[in-house]
Length: 444
Image 1 (tube, rainbow, N blue to C red):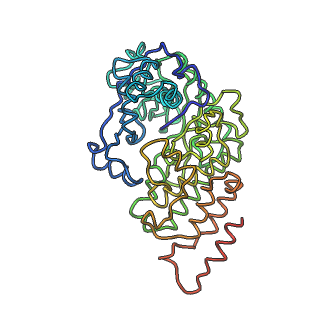
Image 2: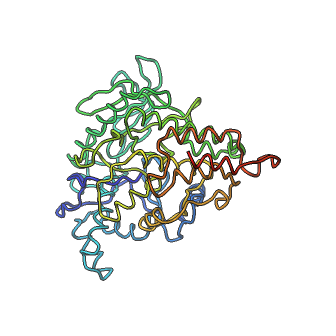
Image 3: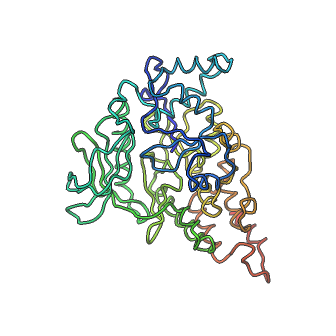
């Protein structure tokens, strides 16, 4: 998951030129051609992937390998396993490319900041606190703490750990999210504690069947933790693209409506989720469940205070994010309109299995695409045309925030009116009158 630091905090700012950064031990950079066939198929489904691209894999990653360009690989290799300062890498790259260091400083600063935030680069002085294979779980199967017995580690990242546990008091399966025992920097430890405190505070105020429930939270040996309900289920896009659902567009539509309804409940309570992408919308046994509120914040939060970490998955970020990046403005703090856009991208993937824009290996190319290219049609993605739905998705994906739906409630209502209106090749030709319907939907 790509997370950018909107505040330029001291925890990650590469302006600390004397600090030596090195590649984390669990990071593996592999040419796309050498990735397993199943993984290559998933990447190719999103669009064209350059043969020169690489996959960045992490031993304890939550998701599939991240596609990175040769330019990014060059930057990471300059830091290497032994480490280098930001200033050293800036000078090496500028010399190799025949540029003035000032020409590279801005873009390299953003890149290195995101690498440190993600734990891809770590402080070489504290790298010894990690195992050679990267962060390893502090708890083992059978360990007991906080009236829970550890069943297995689910995620082990540089900032926190997530375990599946058996709650010995409630006699049910739960999730334990807890801070790590050690951190590469003290600043990261403080930032993680604050983020988890905010996440649990927001969850305690959300009471909706589509939102993961916080059962209890506290501090254990100086580490903030939360016990949450355990939710089984794949990401909604994986469920929607399963063989049985691919042949049932109305079932896909019902799943999409649940996604919008879940996010609508969060907005209705006065919060932004902050990280809208399929991995945080799980297709549970009865309904879609929304998880991971690590980047959530009040809807009217101001970036001026510097209290909120900005982030998300780049492919689901709205065009206004790209505009801010192009201007060198790091004050982007999310919005209702932005999350309507992100939800639109997710629904496009849910219905087509592809992103609304052709895959771009280079981050700058994708940001330009986000600003200028219209979303693809279902036909361009090899799917049956569904004009009424496509018009709704296009509205959600409008480049101008004011031209999107006014709220997720309006978006959900428009989707519900499509129930019973199938794609063109499944519709009954006689008496079809899609024109007026489309006009009504777009006018809403």
